[in-house]
Image 1 (cartoon, one colour):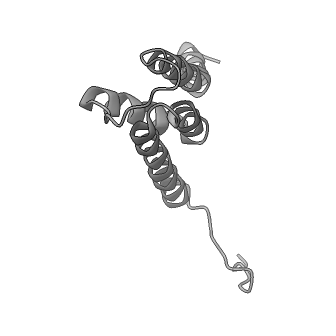
Image 2 (cartoon, rainbow, N blue to C red; image 1 turned 60 degrees about the vertical axis):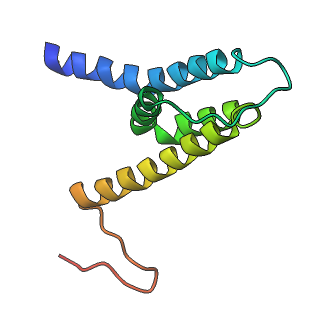
Length: 115
């Protein structure tokens, strides 16, 4: 294993495991801004939207629910935005995987072509 491969493995592990941790830390910081029992309808700022989008782009299956369930009581508008962002990015990533990796999709009634 050369150095570039090793660094790519480390980067992949950091992004896959680091993005949920960063999302959890961010949710805890956001929740401490309001007193217990209060809620607000303020939307995300532009920079925060970019951060949420990037974290959901890396791992939408884990970071999306962290954002949604962490923010839904105190920040319902932010929670809905983060939830829809993660769902849309998951669908885009799934479509890209099928397109770029040529994963065949067959209906149950069809049989795959034989080579």
